[in-house]
Structures are given as C-alpha cells and as structure tokens.
Length: 246
Image 1: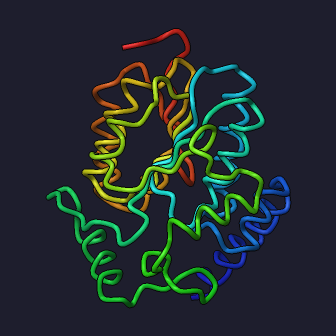
Image 2 (image 1 turned 135 degrees about the vertical axis):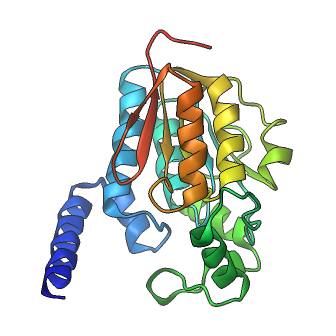
C-alpha cells in the first residue's frame, strides 16, 4: 500500500514536471480538458511532430480518433506552421464496439461501461461520446486555437474509418496519431499507413499498452513490415526507415 502510494506520488510529480516543459498551446489544451493524453504522451507527440518537420519528411499529418480535439489541435498547428495539411478521422459520437476475438476482456469491459452511460469524462466533465454535437464542439475548439476546419489545410472526416479514409485526399503521410482502441480499427489504420507513410515518417500508437486488440494489431503490423522500428514508451512510435519504401 505504501509503495503504491509513493509510486502514484512520483508519477504525479513527474507528470507535473513534464507538463511544465510542454509548449504553451499544449498546456492550453490540457487546461481546457480537451485531451485524455498524459503529459508523457503529449511530450512524445510534440517531439514527433517537430522531428518530421525538421527532417523534412514529406506528407500530411493525420489523426485517427479525434475525441475532444486536443491532440488534433496540436498536430494541426504543427502542420500549419510547416505548410502542411491535417486530416482528422472520427465518428464524432459513440465509438463502435470491439468486434474481434483479439479484443479481450479489457476492451469489452471498457465498451460496456461506455455503452451503459457510466463512462466519466475529464475532470468531472461528461464523457465526450455522449455529446449531441461533438463534431461542432471540436470545430469550435480548433477555431478558437487558430486552426479552423476549413476543408483545405484542416479537414475533419466524420464517419467510420472504412468509409471515410479510402476517399480522403491523402497521398503521402509524414506523421499519424492512431488513437482508436480496438483491434479492427487499429489494423485498418496501419494497413492504410503502411502504404502511405513516407520514409522517415512516424506512426504514434496511443493504446498499445492499454488494450489487447491494439497491441495485437500493432505487433502483427511490425511482423509484416521489417522497414519499421518501434520506439517503446507511454505511447509507442513506429518509424519507417529513411530511404525505405514498400
């Protein structure tokens, strides 16, 4: 019990230190309760976006699973500063249930909580999936932070991934944030990105350590793609070797 309490205290202290080192926009997103990502995950997201810009990796920045729009704001701002496009994909409502045998009890239990109406939001707010106009809320949040959804430099695609992703005007990807929990959507996103990610590009997987299906889909992708390496951490980062292409 004492060790557990000490561990939690250390984690909170480290999180506060990490948060203080994030850029001002990211700190605003956290203060406004627009992201579920921990400061550690946000730091890796920031660093990855900066790296692909500095290394001049070609392509757009994408997010699969926008939720309240916090990480989308961060990525869209980074894309804007570099003269790139940002695409966000989400159903903007209740997420579909886990449907694969590779989604184990962890995923099914989480979805049951969401579907029952008992899921909590950030800091006492309501869960984002219960909102009547989540898409509108995200659009307003993005506009308030200088990255309005204009359909040109910033686009949000509302609907199931298998319906919206194939018709999105994305030719090349520099960075993608995959935050969609279950096996099937993660597998779908990785298959798409495997054909689109530029050499030197990065895929950030949010739920690798949280949900079994996401873990399985990512491991399967890595087994099939020797031109990628994995950087483990709070959120894992898959990097395509510079100079490689399938």
